[in-house]
Length: 155
Image (cartoon, rainbow, N blue to C red; front, side, top):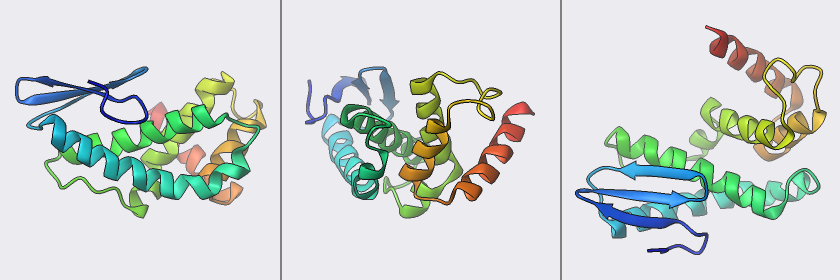
């Protein structure tokens, strides 16, 4: 059933709940649809609260629908992280400043603008502009993170 306003479908599968929306598909173990719905609403609201004030600076770089899609990606990623590690689901500001969140935002921008890892240095500056704006970090800090992230991916 479609139990959220943003199109997330929940299906009970044994003692698990599958959550699907567009290209997203997560299996949450030992959960009920009611629990997943409540945890999701808390997570998505936290990410929206952080991203919403920054959204104006991304206008022209992504549409509202694309930003909503990315917001859902980030919320579901952290929700899955907490559930898989058997922790209480609660997204924090530290989660949203974490390198994994930066990676989610960067990968989303790369999918939109179509640049591979190696092309970024010479590629579309909109990727960097979008990431810096949405993550609300200085460009130099983002560049340092990106160099370290690429080094990590090349291992």
